[in-house]
Length: 188
Image 1: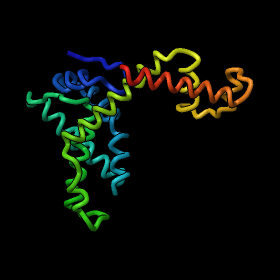
Image 2: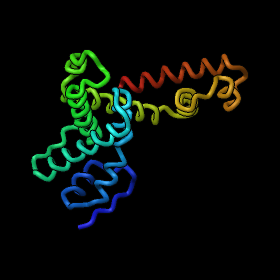
Image 3: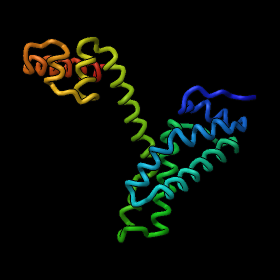
Image 4: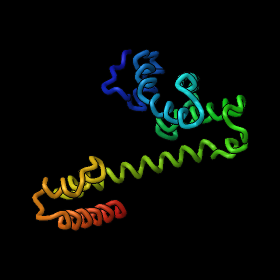
């Protein structure tokens, strides 16, 4: 059975089914899909690109073996699972190497992986909730908020784009839109 993957980052289900069906494509897409996240973590924590490649490879092997053994139950997003496994592997390596740090106890006080997964899931849920709130905000508020906070447009640019008479009017509208967005976010 061959599974055709549509996007560059496969869904969690596609990965699990792909691994169960020995799909090399699923593994390749999985490898490419979440590697940048692990690379960033390793670079921010006394590692280099080679360390990141090694750690990510080990995390993929852990996932692969878990799925193949039949004991795999995904209780979080695959992205979160891989991040947590990679993080645990890297912190273990840091402890073993005592690399670039004199107080390794700082790394031993790291939150347990379960708490780490929970935190990431909460952030993912908040991002999803914000996305829904932003979608239901309506125009022109949706575009004003996106232009200012996501596309980094100045109030002057927003003023011109929407035809406000001055930037103060644009700021007032942005403020009102932000209040509506907060209300939508907290009521859902």
